[in-house]
Length: 359
Image 1 (cartoon, one colour):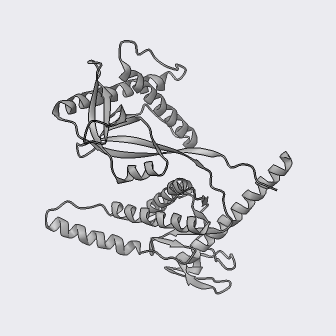
Image 2 (cartoon, helix red, strand yellow; image 1 turned 60 degrees about the vertical axis):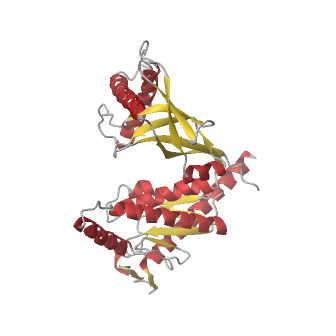
Image 3 (cartoon, rainbow, N blue to C red; image 1 turned 135 degrees about the vertical axis):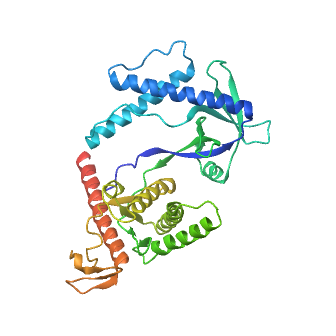
């Protein structure tokens, strides 16, 4: 019996491009950005205390105020949804971002790739700023993504202006496979896969970065965050895993980032970051990424399923029940893969049964 047709969804990715405003345009852009920030703050307070009011009048305030009101409405909606989920008290949000809405279009009469236009507050005219494309944006456009004409001009912390653009593509939900590739993120080895791949040691990477920063400080140079280094390497590992799964037709199984975010342990943020990046890249490459509860994955024996805290000693796992001895992270990735296979099997069976009932 065939499964029901797999639905499609639209995914959106945000990218930043460099813009090159001259002094006069920079002044106009800065003023418009501050005005937009004030409008968003004003309407956030209005909508927070008067939730029954759908929209407030922006007559005589211009298009910028109208756009700010819709932005504030989205912020308040997201804030209240999060408060409902966490059951925590909330207050009027403090708007700190420095950006303003704009539109982007291809350049036909310039050496620059794009023109980014924004409307000034009182002059009621469109000011255009040139922008350049980059390798990542061209990669998305070659792979069927479309560039959304709506964008944002953003003032970064270093004082430079960039334009945040959005690319969109309609993709199919990938069909899950019972043949899974489990992935564990740990301290002794940053990424370990159930196919036997063992990544670099996170401790060695952190120590190497600390040594480099010490030398930079000695020479009065800027230091680099160890988090940035780990994120770059985790991105590489996530892309490798998705590529392997796509070639072999497997589903990737990672630890659930929502559950991981509530746990407290060393390098917990790295586990969450890797899981989220793998989910994002899996969407782009149409590879199924399944998430599983991380409970006791490092204490469970892959061979017999026995759970015992004493079975793991640092990077060695030796089951106290069956005597199975292996690498601790390899064992954990195998357990994650087994749990994912069982969950996917149950999911496919339930879909088959629901299809049978409908027929």
